[in-house]
Image 1 (cartoon, rainbow, N blue to C red):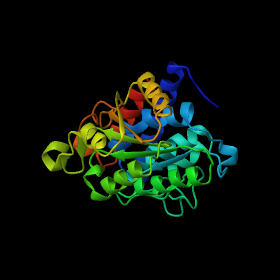
Image 2: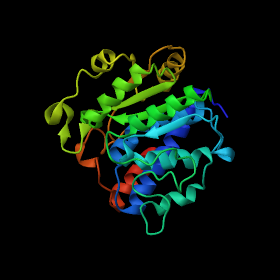
Image 3: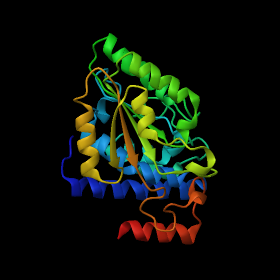
Image 4: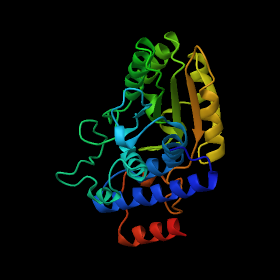
Length: 273
């Protein structure tokens, strides 16, 4: 299934955002801010770009996705449910006892999850291994890895970036969710990772900068990434933390906090409009 209609993709992204709010409210914990900022990226990947099939989620030829910023699991789970990997009703079990939907993705128990993540900085190394395997075995699949702009303060990210360039992993695409906020505050105040584009360029990446909430720009960026040869691609997606819910947007306090009933009702009302 490949959806090319931008309006339809925007509607899907909105439904995924509703799922994020449902999860975090039901679980009374979680990370809504960075989940909401990444929804449009995930929507384009899962509904327009990636070679995947929910009915054969272990196919060797499938494209892989690694959510390196694993705390944004509500966005991934809602996307997977919308794509048909499991019933949307399961989203309300988020972080519950005996639920498959833990606070961080679990590849052993959740259909569609390619890598267990959560310890920040490690996802790109895993994605490198997948991409290298695809090349060595001539499997032909692509690997997408979503990292946070706060997460790239981790040194392992840059070790992995160096390796990706060294092995010419042109089947690897890194996406930076650049919402400019992390758990302790503004990115520039805590530990600036700017200029992000120049850093990835210096490590040998092809760099593409986009509005991370513009579906058309994202589609074009991913299409361009597929044409790049002999080096990996980094898409720097400028986003807004808490995108889609007015009182959460660009507010660091919503990095890791669940809404109360009044806030939940307001968020759902805004998204359903």
